[in-house]
Image (cartoon, rainbow, N blue to C red; front, side, top):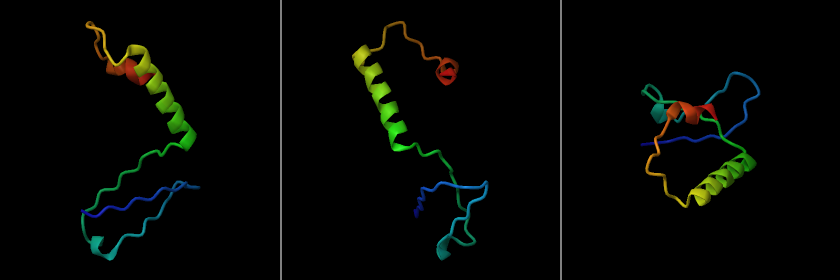
Length: 73
């Protein structure tokens, strides 16, 4: 499988991606993800580590994951 990864900052609502010739006339999948800045990633990692350390990596017996609650934050 061939993969192309580009990290860019678009300045309009259009982007152009130059494809290798071997992908022309092939079905491809394009996935666009937000790429956090270094400080955002570090802040997130720090918050997760703080939560993990506070819980000592153990969930309470009555813990129930609530997807809706998780998305609210």
